[in-house]
Image (cartoon, rainbow, N blue to C red):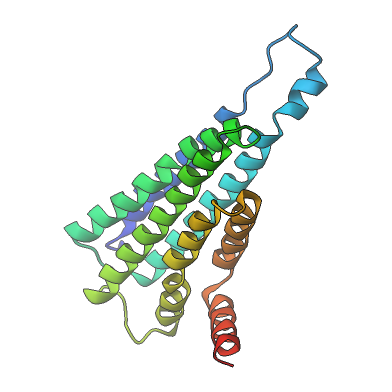
Length: 206
């Protein structure tokens, strides 16, 4: 018997695949005859950095989306709408990536970084809305240990990405570095991420 959420997952996989592919289109081929090719390629380093980071981030979001729907057993109209809201955020990622690549080494790097980090802050909220609704409506087995670990891991997301956003006004490199750290954190299996969160909580309490 086909899982009730199978069509949602298939559609979502397609959106993730398109979004992650579009990222490479923002890396332009230097026009022939304008300057030394090697120099032009080196000058595009912000585009390479932004591409690699956003490719990793969309890939990690896809992994997390897959994890959610291994726990979510059924769906309704609201869940589908919340999933579309999350996919909207995923589709937007190539645009702030292109803006950041264009302005990372220029005077407008701060507004570009705000747009970039703001996008991921919104996506973190969308992930929590989707997961929270599924748990509240009984679409997830609430006693499942995996589901509890996912809740712990996702619980720190919006606050952490808000810190990334606010950090832009202090240090853009530090803000982007923290974003990379968060990507690694969300790439971890929930059981390992939960251990990290509990360890930090104990260290804070002491």
